[in-house]
Amino acid sequence: MKEIIEKQNELRKWIKKLDMTQKYFAEQYFIEEYGSLIEDEINAFYEKFKGHLKRTTTPVETIEVYLNYLYQMDEFKEKCYVRPVYVEDDLFSKEFDKRMKDISKMITMELENKVNK
Image 1 (cartoon, rainbow, N blue to C red):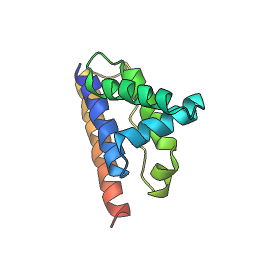
Image 2 (image 1 turned 180 degrees about the vertical axis):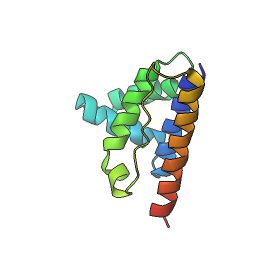
Image 3 (image 1 turned 45 degrees about the vertical axis):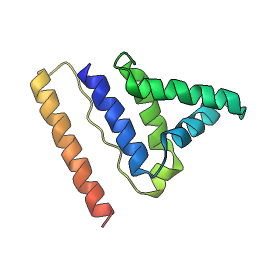
């Protein structure tokens, strides 16, 4: 459950950092993914998206799909943000993986601070 909460918070953080609303992000995702401009369908998807950001039962993979889309958006690229990357594997202990992930996040934040100065 902790992993999904972290991913949901990460997605919320990036959306806010890019000066977007959750509604705008959901609309852009829906239009890109489904090619529909029907407002009722977009609004229905937005409600579904809000649920994905709230429920701890949302699959982590669902949030990762949204994050991958966000990383490809022009708004992300235009601000010269760096996509945070740490790939876990089964070679190391959970504690080691967590520490490496934390280090990766710190490096990303440091790089972002330098780019945004």
